[in-house]
Image 1 (cartoon, rainbow, N blue to C red):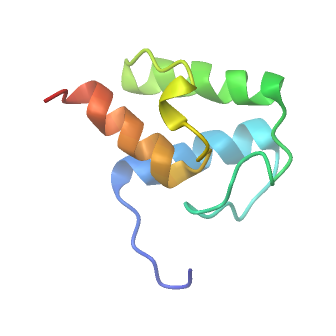
Image 2 (cartoon, rainbow, N blue to C red; image 1 turned 90 degrees about the vertical axis):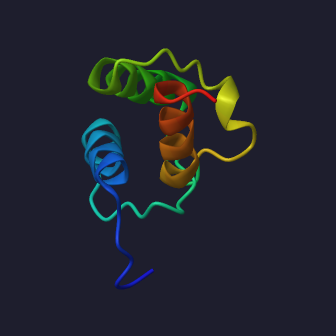
Length: 82
């Protein structure tokens, strides 16, 4: 979405995903599997996310939504559980 403002977490997640998937222009609403992520590359993304944000995500938290937006929400929940 043109002009969309990303929060800092989403910006970092985009960088991680672009690096692992070796592609530019990933948008927060894009499904990472639709962009070519495999189970292995998704695990690599999760490893990087867990290291960067000091969380312990497994991927199960995402349900059927493997997007940056959902990943960012999971990071926020893991960092600040209610």
